Length: 85
Picture 1 (cartoon, rainbow, N blue to C red):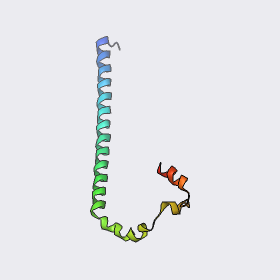
Picture 2 (picture 1 turned 180 degrees about the vertical axis):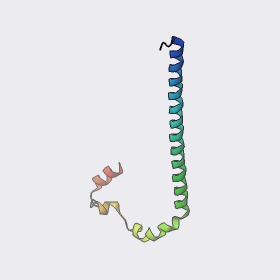
Picture 3 (picture 1 turned 60 degrees about the vertical axis):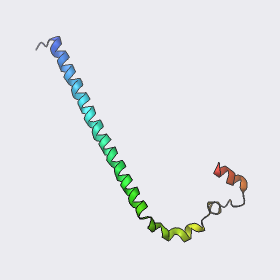
Picture 4 (picture 1 turned 90 degrees about the vertical axis):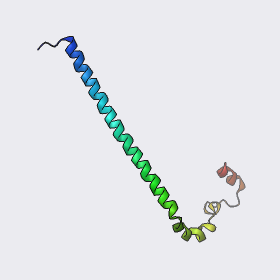
């Protein structure tokens, strides 16, 4: 079987076009998936913010929370500064 140069070039062009089309299809599919994931996260965040009353139960507990007490560095001002920096 003897293939001319122009036939080989056409075959190579077809392979390149198929590869590019395949790449673009996968890229668009991935891009659509990422876009949908962002939309889902945005909806979840909006739903959470709308239902912010669920956090009211934590108010009493969070009013007394002090990270420096938890870390046992309440009286160590240099460490306060390091954490805040």
